[in-house]
Image (cartoon, rainbow, N blue to C red; front, side):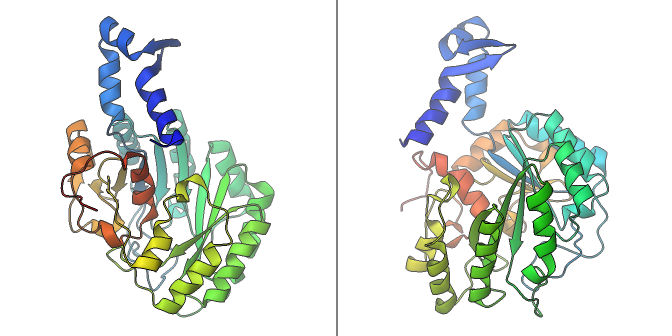
Length: 336
């Protein structure tokens, strides 16, 4: 087992803290029976849950299947109930998404609630169009820890408005005022590839974490031609990798056409839509789902071991990253 995996599992399985005291697995089991329950939960608990708080978006990107123009925000009490349920399932990190989450009138209160519930990481995914200095300060005060913004190129076209020409000022405000981490992803597929290079360069100069993503189809599968894939290889080779990117799955997709992995979606990664239904990811809502409020630890265990037939050509980094730690564990049906 690699050192990050070993460290994490040793920390989880050998030492648990409760009420300020330290319990080893054996002593906790003999004293209260608490450790086996905690350890069992840690074996399958979600590392990340992405929760849609509003489906509506201010943009209409031509490649996007995750927005509409009419949906109302999910009421705050409903969202709080869902957060509490996710916490009871042992969820480590929460990411608020949409649509465009900044359209939700209770976004700041919702972030505060995430911090009150003590999720290990509270983040959000945004197109950045509503950013301004006073809102950034509100996000700071609420306790936001991470924001992800994807940018398709430099100049707008018939497919996308998420470009540097529209966002440079807002990104500079983030640089100047944000006290949370910012990841800016250049997305290959909607604009000329050389524009994505400029996005990545600008993000680096601003001090943000740069990434390069591949545009996918409505099923989460790769949809780019060889020229775009070659451009991806050229750009990504110049970006330092963080620990979440060590699987090199995008490079393998580009090089080999497939990148098999043991997908643990439905367990290590949960996607919760605006109706409160859990799916493997945003692109498999029509394939499988279950009500979050009915979700159990047994569901986490079952979905952890369930084989996902779309895994070989999946481009969804959230599901892949959340599945990395458990690659050494068996999954029936996985033969690669």
